[in-house]
Image (cartoon, rainbow, N blue to C red; front, top):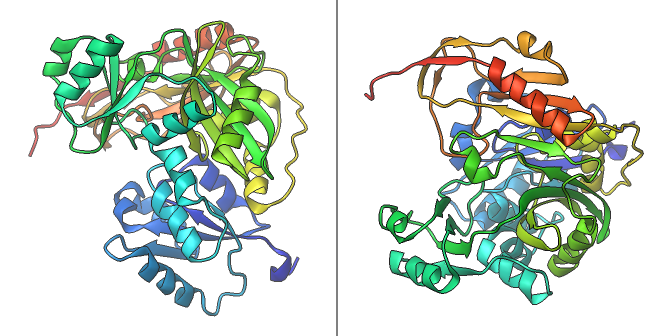
Length: 410
């Protein structure tokens, strides 16, 4: 294959992830990395060194995107195979990445679509416009706004930034007293009614405006509970044990409402056994290792299929598996220097464990973060049912040990 026949992709790279690693390991495509200076701290030096042979364009956040797009075009001069396709796996850089793609003439979301998939208040407004059910919500700028909402709609409420992800700066407030003790972050905020029922997730691949398939997940604990130490896991609900049978119709309605042409859609929802309430929607690869769960459970190359959609090629969705698989994030509850940690080889010997990936080691200085994706690593666990997988995950948690020696600030 000569370079004229090879697909060429501009890929946003603001943190190492399994999907990016998969793409970089492919030898049949050319990849240019789009990086943002404001995310340099999230790209470890070891990762930068390992990818230093890749064409990488750094966007200076102190300059306009028009200026940076012009600089990018000059940077491409002399390149044999310039990118003609674009993929953004990043939630926090959604706005800047899509605007940059537009400036350089690559496939992109419009500014309106970005608001629908990024700004949670605009998102819920659009969902309600097309007849989908969401939680009651309101934009807020003060505690008195939150209190007014709680008095009208009832407590508890969920306070969150309109553009957050991974539960960062998101809080469950059970009553007015908890509101009074909570500081509002200095960023645009919203409040919404707390939803009962089961909280779940669903991923989908979209091509030419059509949903190719959907893959629901079950969460043993809600994300806000995970922040307080509950099991942090997602289990691909291959057998639809906990997910609504109408989940595909819900996703198709969202795709029509947001006028999505192609991509990987990830959404969170609530289900009370009768009705689905849409929580949040993102047009990017799912967080943690949720996407990998689907590939392992259904028995197909999920990352390859996703890449094909972004390259404009028909993906192979021939499934060969019939099991339930989930990812369990390993807890890292304290800040300090790691003195003891369970080896991944020991975890791999536990029942159902398919893979174990520990990102830290003895001697590392680690810090806690209030984010649902923060962890010491992850394991993939397989079983015959959701309950089976969840039980095996608990065995992993009971086995895993991480000891940290606290350090004094400063």
